[in-house]
Amino acid sequence: MDEATERSLVTRAQRGDASAFGELIGLTQAAVYHVCLRMMGERREAEDMAQETFVRVYERLHTFDPQRPFLPWVRRVAANYCLNQLARRAPVSTSFDDALDWPENRPGRWHDRQAEQARRVRAALLRLAPRQRAVVELRHFQELSYEEIAQALNLPISDVKSDLFRARRLLAEMLKDDPSN
Amino acid sequence: MTHLTEETLNLFLDQALAEPEALAAQAHLAACPACSASLADLSLVFSRLETLGDSQIDLDLGPRPCSG
Image 1 (cartoon, rainbow over the protein chains, first blue to last red):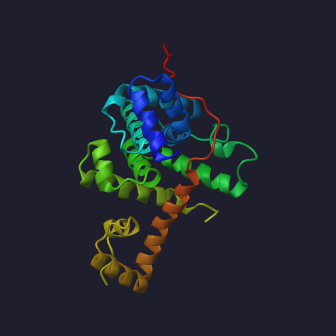
Image 2 (cartoon, each protein chain N blue to C red):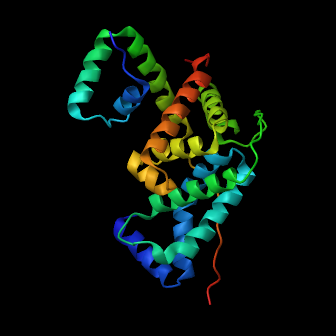
Image 3 (spheres, one colour):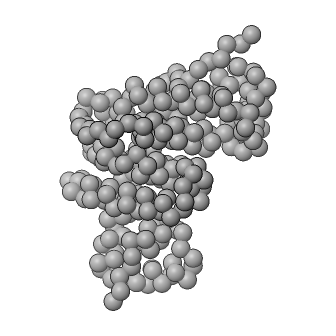
């Protein structure tokens, strides 16, 4: 979709055009779902979080500047929403197996080695503390700068760096014994 | 030889070092197997995370506000 079409959809949605907002959902829902799946780790929960993300997007749509790209904003809302939900919960020890409905567990879509790598990375990501996970999401998948992450999560840059660098160290340790290295 | 700090290695991979510091880090890495190994461990994290990108999936999410 070109920028002019996106701007037009956003402007129409801001004026209350439900079909325009529906189109925006259709265009961004897969990306939002993947943010939520990386943050939450479970398909149904990721779908719920993605739906709740769009509720929040709808509520805040009037604050969005249509001159800016829509998808990065929606993905940030999703990451923030998931982080807030995770932060409210008691930490849980999670076990992962092939039964989880992750994209890499669906037959026929991935090569075996690639799927195994993806499973290991997703499981490692889910062992990080929620804020570390959010910082990794925003840096590695949404390609935000340290400053932009600090702004998105309302944190000092020093905390962003500290969380990110520690998360990478933990991931490196968890992935180091990966037989596919 | 003073090794590169974890922060410098991360900033180097994020391309967040100023040019003189980036060049100095590059020169150190060329001469220091220990720091090169640490950088390789970190680089592996970067490449592994790429396996979890946004793949195409069939979904129908989100509230659909009623028209009218």
